[in-house]
Image (cartoon, rainbow, N blue to C red; front, side, top):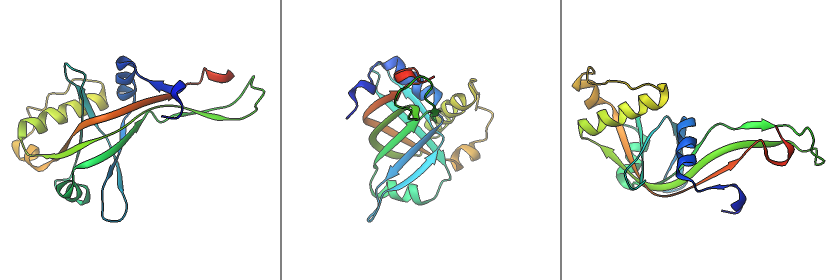
Length: 168
């Protein structure tokens, strides 16, 4: 990371970035160029603070085909950011406030209905801020939906806050 002054290493701050963010940009390998797709996501940390991500979608499609060929992938998650305008700065230069998590891991297609249900509950809870009970959803629906589990191998987090350099 070039800007070590913006690196976030505190696990609670990283969890807050993930909590406040709602779109993951997943990059998958192709023969020619990376294939990047934005989706909603869910996340969880185990007792050792190992990060696992989940994304969902149709049960067929290009990203699923790519994962079958090679599950290694990269991702970027950010909170959407906000334009900062200088008020007191001598630089008279606008900037952009953001918080992000970038990393890589191994993606796998989930077949187990209980893992799918768990992932979808995490996703809906993340998106709505409420605990959602999916046990009323039919087995046919759970079977149909495509869920991808990403076992994160490494990541970094970064932030550029509005309080820096005289920005509000």
